[in-house]
Image 1 (tube, rainbow, N blue to C red):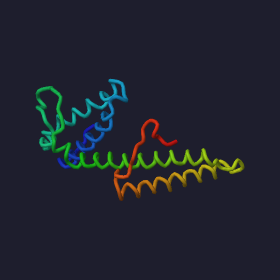
Image 2 (image 1 turned 180 degrees about the vertical axis):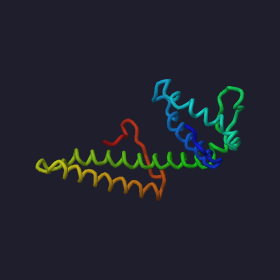
Image 3 (image 1 turned 90 degrees about the vertical axis):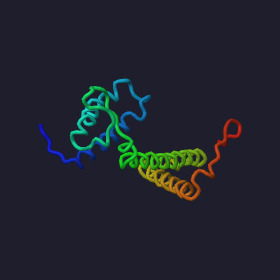
Image 4 (image 1 turned 45 degrees about the horizontal axis):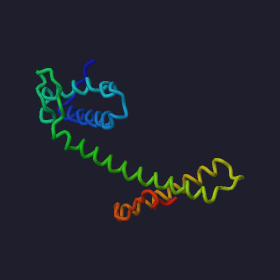
Length: 160
């Protein structure tokens, strides 16, 4: 199969491949040694062909040497890098807000369990609405004050 692709499209393909490899390898300790290898050969093929496609500025290395190619700083710090950074930041805040909200809901439910006669789907909907409300409250706080008002208590200082 042959695909006709422009220089601009190839550059975008390299950005997509870079972001995909970042996802696949950013938490290597979570995978066995073979995991990144599943994608590495295809990624290397794209990097090796970059100079022929007018995208030499996006890679480092000599495609004719047979050695591994690497992405350039321009690729790492360009649009793909910006998207990864934004994604990481958004994930951090979303996870923090949601986990705190779920923790708070568990505490609320341990103090005041829902009535036994409440239908399961109604209980579920109520709990999800409460998590959403608590998460939004944390989100508003973090938008206004970042982490300035966060205090972590360790050991005997821990609240339960």
